[in-house]
Amino acid sequence: MRADELVEKVTSDAPSPRYTVDDIVSAGRKVQRRRRAGWTVASAAFAVTGVVAAVSIGLPDAEVRPTAGEQAAAGTSLVTASPLTPAAGWEFPDDPFQYVFQRFDAGKLHVKDPIVVSTAYQIAPLHMDGLVTNDRAVDPKDVVEPRDAAGPKGAAGPKGVSKPGDDARQLYAYLTVYRPGAFDAEKFTGNRVTVDGHPAIEQDGPTYGANLRRALAWEYTDNAWAVAESFAEPSDVAVADLRALVAGLRPSVPAPARVPFTVGYLPAGYHAAELGQHAYAGLNGIAAAGDGNYGGAIFAAPALPTTGLVEPYGGPEGEDPPGSFQIFVGPNANSNQALPDGEKPPAEPKCGNGFCNAWSPDGKTTIQVDSDGRLSDAEMTRILKGIKLADVTNERTWPTAATALRAG
Image (cartoon, rainbow, N blue to C red; front, side):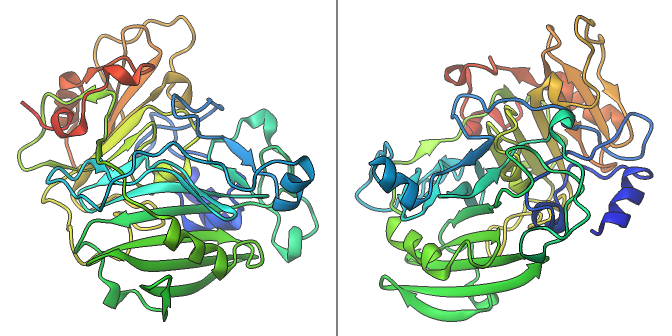
């Protein structure tokens, strides 16, 4: 989506909170904005208007890792050990909403704990030494107007950037680990190689401004593939950097995913397809991992495919999966329908065009059901009224997804 198209959409049909590749890459991941507009427009409306710190798991909102040279000069280790719960081999429970790997370091790359999991895969943010991973929304006071001149290495200047500065080198990257049989390697084009004894496929392109999409897929165990994708300037993330992930990915004892709510009602035929823990579901959740959102889930009818995939549901642009609706749970301050301080939440859910909102009794947490018009207001209201919140600030109170996302 080009800038003129984005302006037109924001002022007309108010797109849902999706990050197009141009939003993610051409702007260098410098501006993270939820673009759901107000109550009077024709789409959903869960928007970020401020900056909120990450909750519990400590994901950095704009992390700048020191380069290897800076680390050496400071006398610090080039690799930081991650607390792991190792397993002897890969285990894939019947319940797909369980994490089967944990954070690890591989040279300059640092894979965070997975925070999105679906019936076919799980996704973790990927950071790198020396680069800014800006996975938070922009506070208006932090926005810098675009430069007249071209950006670094000829990149067009973005509409606004968030601190730490206009010239900060950016990275948007993630690792998707697919369950056995879910990924179709035959559909994934590229240069077929062997990396650390594993069949692999290297893929470069397309290019967005000065930023190159670079991907590496590899078979990490029998019939199961992982894919690392990065969007950055070509010289910042090398093929060798991605290859280092192959030896680093190791199994951990499966751990159930948890969400800060329980559903009490689902429309007939709908089943949970994907969730976010301390994030919204899907790549939108990964793109905004530092926003401090509590959780979310995608439900679909019919069930979304668990084979033949080459990308996460909704693709890199964060589209709504077919036949789906979503639940978003986040701080009231993260919504552009945020209740003013001290205002009492409405007694009944409040609906716009394609979404309905409710609040916790103290007004500090917003719960939204968004179907983009696929469900009636009455159905979305019924879903909202059936949702029971846990203590959103205390993960120990959160139920496992396997039980929380099944109605009745």
